[in-house]
Image (cartoon, rainbow, N blue to C red; front, side, top):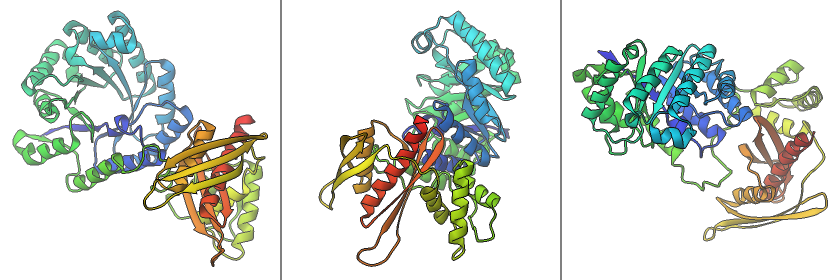
Length: 467
């Protein structure tokens, strides 16, 4: 029985619209499929994306974690710095090899592309023992050039070589013949793992992948809601015909459908693409419960604060510790209480922005709109936006004023007092450059409390940006 590795590329190619925490949730679902490799997006924002990769590394233990290494030494070093603590790290180089894509995507001639492949693969191999080279649009490459490119990558240290049928123009038997031909022209391929990434443009991605396996390929790239080999179709083929074909894979067939349903739900959530809100739990929520009491020392409080994702200086940590001791005298403190303490005590700064007024229109027969006025340095600024509900509309109106989007990591509301004049408390956590900033708002109007909490967190970001 021939074992075929599965490399799941959904997170790499189909998560750009997801929030930080939704990407983490998607990754956790992919882990449950028992795929051999999980490919992640390239690092574009060094602080935020590094935090994302390191968070993944903390729970991805049974799969290879593959990170794009870019086309420069600096990009490779940045990727490795984020990935190096993973249980099974892999650096991934992807280079176009067809005449059109070399010129259009890289602006390089063939000889320069070969130099790039050799240099970047060697750089990655010096950092990581597991390096993958992907030949983009390989089926439309000049045969001699493709042969040279593959040999160069292997000689420079690539342990996995992926052949990409990016155009999806080959039929299964043609693709199988193509793979066999590569083995003949590049004998070095027998010493590495040959992988394939098949376009599903003609609906033949899975069929081409199976044909490639029969021709000698040892790894197949799959995705969900992507124009490549479908994870579901590929798994179904193995389930129904695996024994007769003499092939097997590590996918968890028992729970796969449930995982696929969850992945599709995450990728097709029925909400506005502009929405700043998300129903997922905080990406920084502690894996275990927080339970602080009057006997907790400052090191215990510090560890609990860090588990929530915050980085506090000594002064702010002292303020939080004093508040914990004060409140813990009458009640135990869990994660929600600690969140509120951090928001209320830590990093209190001058107000760059102040709320002047807000008008919300919402109902069961009209869409929600928000008209927000903020002041900064004596200047009144206005924002008007619609959204998925009044709070979403309000946050989007603030973003319109700022001309900038901040990732909303968490949002909580709760009643503080009871009765018709009850006070409502809101907690907002914004993510900026890989760091969390929490804000708290209090009002008899929960929408007002939410707006105040957002502005409170925003002012902390602006204060640090000016520092």
